Image (cartoon, rainbow, N blue to C red; front, side, top):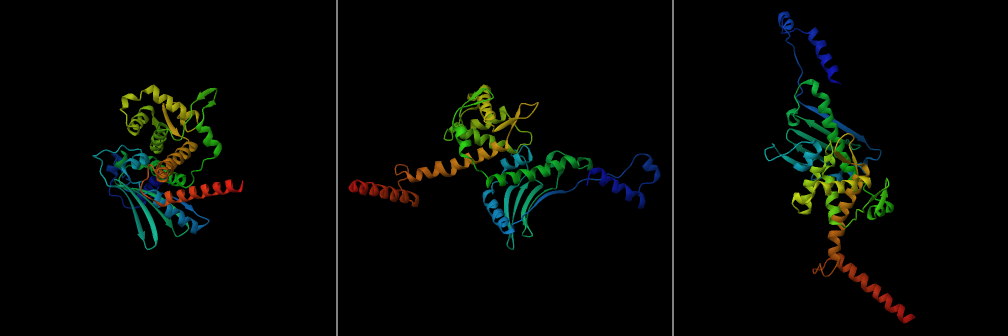
Length: 322
């Protein structure tokens, strides 16, 4: 269904049907042209275990309710969103009977995802206004619109997949925690609990969905915000040092013939795993088990207290037996 084939079909029937343009008008160059008023681009993954697919999709909905926020949509579609950009920007979960569906809105464009006929995961992007992407409505713009729509579908699926498949091997984790020699160059460690490293991982993760990657300047602006520092303190040389660390550790790669970078597949998995583990487990839960930081009783703190009592009791019994 290329633009040329669609136009050829139109010309075929215009030759057979009565034509409102007389021969004089056609000789003067007047022609019909097709316009794209709406285009829907979809990807469908058929599942060999439909029940597991339904469970997976319900988990996907819970984990990705923030996809409709302006920052996320800016990354998915590579569009700059300001206060003047028409909305709404939102994520909606719609239940039709017992079949849930996830809807993500961006101006006149919508991404819809649902469990199709109980055995497939369908992701479809519908563009109702090509002007949202500064592209005209002429038929020759079809390839550009296809690229935008299919790229949006794949990036949404990629984020959802990584959410459920972010596993780090012990060897890989240790390589990040220690300095290494890569390509005869010494590269410093990316320590898990280092606030600068966590901010750096969060920053590159934000820019993952940009099709053209990110630059030193873009990363510096967002990293400064995460660190709570003025942008002037993060010099270009300092950012080059951070980019070099990420590149030699294999987390990012330079786009050929440009000064822009993108996350590797390994980098996406690693940064997503480390940032989520730190935010959801270590930073939050560690405070809950320490009496000094968690004066209020909670189930986790009581469990650790009982564990400590049992260990002390076992040690006392061992001393008596000796």
